[in-house]
Amino acid sequence: QRGARDVRRCAARAPMNLLCVAAVLGMRARPMMSASTKVAFSKYHGIGNDFILVDNRASSELLLSPEQSKRLCDRNFGVGGDGVIFALPGENGADYAMRIINSDGSEPEMCGNGIRCMAKYVAGLEGRTEPHTYTISTRAGPIVPELTADGMVKVDMGEPILEGPKVPTTLPTDAQGRVIGVPLMVAGKEWKVTCVSMGNPHAIVFVDALDDTALPLATVGPKFENHPVFPARTNTEFVQVLSRTHLAMRVWERGAGPTLACGTGACALLVAAVLNGLSERKATVSLPGGDLQIEWLPNNKIMMTGPAEFAFVGEASI
Image (cartoon, rainbow, N blue to C red; front, side, top):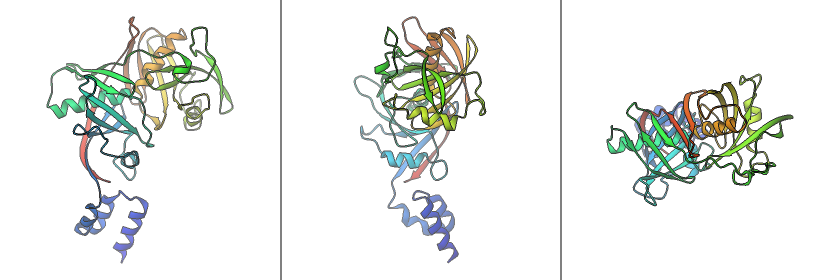
């Protein structure tokens, strides 16, 4: 009877928590597996921004629904991750296509740390160990990651979008249509916001300090994300300038909340720092999970270089 009560309690707390059920009933849990969807996955992270990667190359339709992906990302009752990345067949001449479902079930246009993880993942699927360049289709357009000889991944992130309505934001623009250092009231405080899109929207704010006392991220972050001046919601980067070649940031990601890193955010904040006269066009960006090297080239493209690390493989029943 106690075992049955434990199973009912476990199942009520988490429909996908079959591991908990199996721990109580052992072999008797097996019949429940037949009603579940099984999915093989690999876990990767880019300086702490962690993803569940799924081999979806056999179909252009996602193997999991947004709700299933959300449950898989749950850090208590699922595998745990900031998002699920699906490696799909290439389109329009690309080697592969990438789609990502955030931990809240929403779908962003692109993810900078995620694209590095996907490049490492598909190289592993191919059994490739040498340097190689891929073209990967995303909802933000084609992205070109390069696996380098030192184990890093260098990514051509394309050109930043600076026109306010295209970010998108309804904040007032300058004569060139850009939103640079515009005051915005959030959580009872005025912040000066610069807006940049890297295929997904970013609001960048420069601050004096990044500690919890100076920056109550859990309070301020969601208010930025859902502010009405950002019709598609927004990622928000809070940036401390350490020097003209070294920037530090904390991020509140749209659809994921606080994460250890955001690749597109690191690119966007460098652009914002240059536009505000605070940085050179090449700098180290320090995030809670580690460092990225970002450069805004004369041809207007942004290059991002950083690691992508394999964690483990597994099979989940959902």
